Image (cartoon, rainbow, N blue to C red; front, side, top):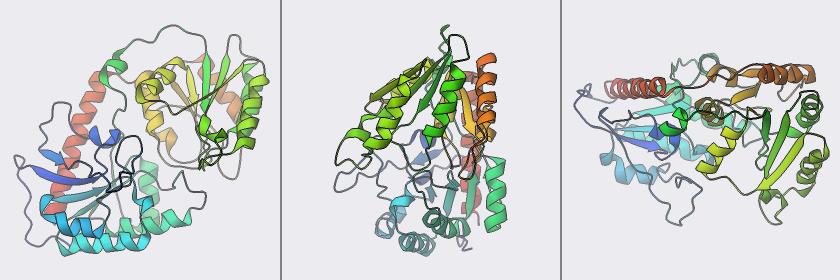
Length: 364
């Protein structure tokens, strides 16, 4: 591992400039304390020359380019990768590592996904991790299980730091109104790790036995748009057909805005994650912020993030009885919910921990 020649620990009063990939994602924005004061400045996401973006404005990540680093290395102290490198060839990632080393810039990597939820074949993501994890000066992840996997597979021991809040303060503090029990399954556009159909049959049967309960299924309209990347009318029709069952509602719509998403999650008693594989979830954190219970699959590290009901579901298995038990547990119980003072304190702690990690990398 290349150290930064002649580096000294930066004093707490020194401003540290971080090239964060990305900077505008809510996870990254909430690594700063609410009132600032950590002395860390994250560079804004450069806009792609061709204007290509997705909601949030940071895709594809312009900073993940050896030439960008060569031109801009004097403008940052550390380089911190979170998301977006799946748009970059593995060879380019290796060139990025080399460019950072050439200019004495530490690489920090936060391992959010040990398995990319958008890729059915794990090999490409694993190849990228085989570049990033050995090369990183410091590694962060979100749960002890993910840290143990990294240590076992790559011989690196990451720092484990929790996911910060996702939803803004006033919504975390907003009381939940009394409402019927609504279990939500958002199929979105059926990304690679989602397999809702076998789950929905069991859910519909279970919901029918719970007085006053409703199953709400949401999906994006792009499933029915010819020429769209996500066009899959057969799967869409199968999901819509579930709406014929008693106590089941199916809604088709465009992507929610953030405000619409928070309103949707707040309207649910529980949200079920229909994932066959994955690692961590910002959706789960938003549910915790809003007091919506979560039913999570046994794959990944979801159950370690926040309290939730768990059912056996991964690429190899689905235990219908465990799903029925999970639904009944959330129906009969009450959801854990974040409170703002704790979330605010958590942000302060996360900011201090990140600052310390940056200083440690610079002191190598």
